[in-house]
Amino acid sequence: MSGIRPAPSSPHYRVVWFRDTLKLDTTERRIMEVRGSRHTLIIRKVQSSDFGNYSCLADNQIGKTRQYLELSGKPNPAVFRSHAVGRSKDSYNITWSVNSYTPIEEFKLSFRKVPTPSTPGTAQQPSNQSKRTNRRVSQIN
Image: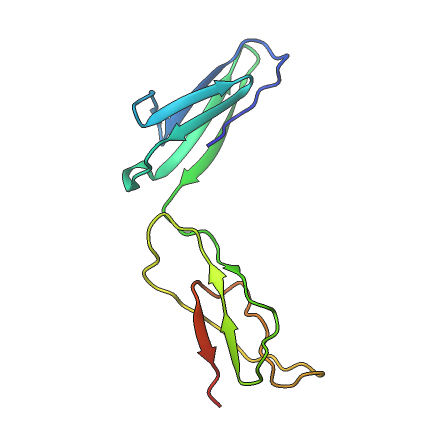
């Protein structure tokens, strides 16, 4: 997690990391790294107990600023890998991938047939409402 990058010419500043409202200290799994003006919080071997709202506060004699981020176990959005137009008029092989902290337990897939003037009956790639994994989906007429 990268925090605030104060300008190199700014007056002396202090950077503090928080989880919710609690100030964080360095531990065996939690490291606060500084490289030049870049401040980074590194959490090793992330566990579900690490999930929460984090913030990085930088302050000096002129003022202060804070940046926020959430660390959660929610999967990232699915990325479709299959072609936008299927090769068959009555089926479509949908392929996608998802990065997730924990294994995906359930998949929900929404699709619809969208005919085009040049190739009636050809299914097109589903909208971003669709969810994750590799499945063969056949339309039943």
